[in-house]
Length: 75
Image (cartoon, rainbow, N blue to C red; front, side, top):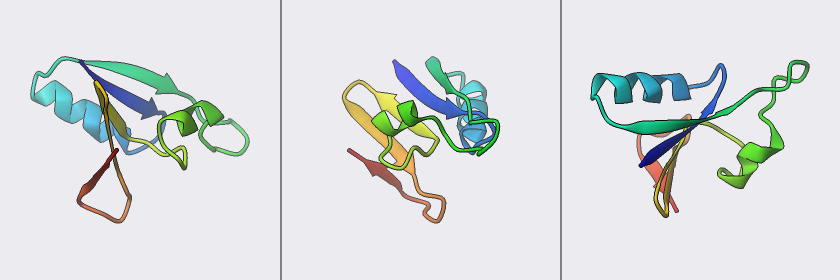
C-alpha cells in the first residue's frame, strides 16, 4: 500500500488531494512542524535526507519531489 509521508503546511497536501480524486488506497504518516522554527521534525529525515515532504513510500520504493523539479527522485 502507498504511504504518504505528510508534513503539515506542505506541498504534500496536493498529493493527498490527488490520491483522493483518483480513489487510490493509501495511508498517511503525519508529521508536525516545530511551532517556533516551522522546521520538519527529525523523524522525517529517516525517509528524506533533508526532511522534506511530500514523500511517497510504496513497498521498498521511496519517491520524493524537489521543489524546483517536475521529475520525482527515487531510491
